[in-house]
Amino acid sequence: MKVRKVGATLVVTLTQAVLQQIAFSEGDRVLVEAVPPRRIIISKEESKVPNTRRIELEIQALEARQRAIESDIEYKIFQHNKSMPVDEGMNDESVAELILHGLNHERDTVAASIAQKRLELFELQGA
Image: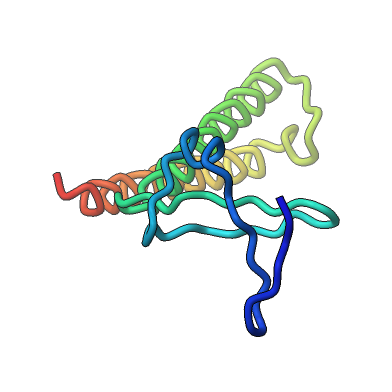
């Protein structure tokens, strides 16, 4: 394939072999992404709402964050209960309690974000 100039624009012609694999048609919308220094990615734009996949990934990221917070809570409770403070302040009852309340609050905030994202996804899917 070669790049040619049409007016002030550069044009790449796609062969039939490429078109058969991707099923592009005249008038289809495409996304073009530069991947420097030598690549370009051309993707067929989905007819469905493309935001749904992004929201699904955001939900997965938030769920992973929620699991990490739960793990941190368990870790801090363990070190406090076993009188084996590793993190600063965990040997002081009041400080340990404050730290754990903060983690619980952070976990609940993430849970609320997950619920909000699920609602956005529901609305986008029209279900």
